[in-house]
Length: 193
Picture 1 (cartoon, helix red, strand yellow):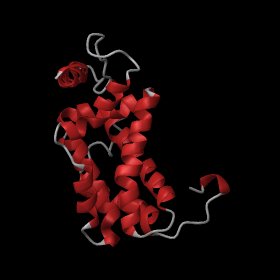
Picture 2 (cartoon, rainbow, N blue to C red):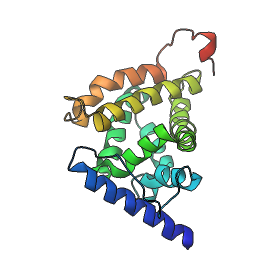
Picture 3 (cartoon, helix red, strand yellow):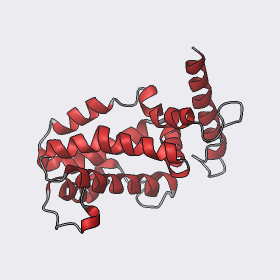
Picture 4 (tube, rainbow, N blue to C red):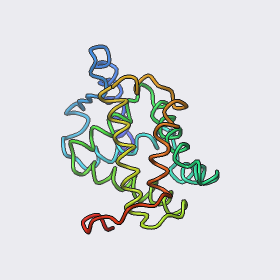
């Protein structure tokens, strides 16, 4: 019960800080109060990374199954649409921004985000898409998705920020599709997974 109360307190503190900073253009610069969590606490990183799941925004297994249910040739565009839908479903992108920013500044959070993105979501997608070297392909897809999140929700670069998912999917989807199913040139030795 103490853990649940603490998690709710952290999520509430995160939402309050995001809402407070949004008015001055600092949305997502989350400052968790000392009484909520100590900096560097593994629990904090876990809470921020699991926020989308705890808030009912998505179930990774359902997301992967849903994406793989369609034609593999459209998988790149479906990933972009789904990814943006998850981000846009998060109120003010608060929990999602907190998750991303936490991963940038805390190694434990970065490790958890890598695990979530690569092992839980993207590797199963690349295996399901049938391409060779699923670990490399998953990392390439992750590079594009994290870059999109930073461009759209952190830096807020126009016109990417105001573009709809339907506008961005055909622009970004082909790159993801090539990473998922296309012929990749032989990677340098350092990129072998």
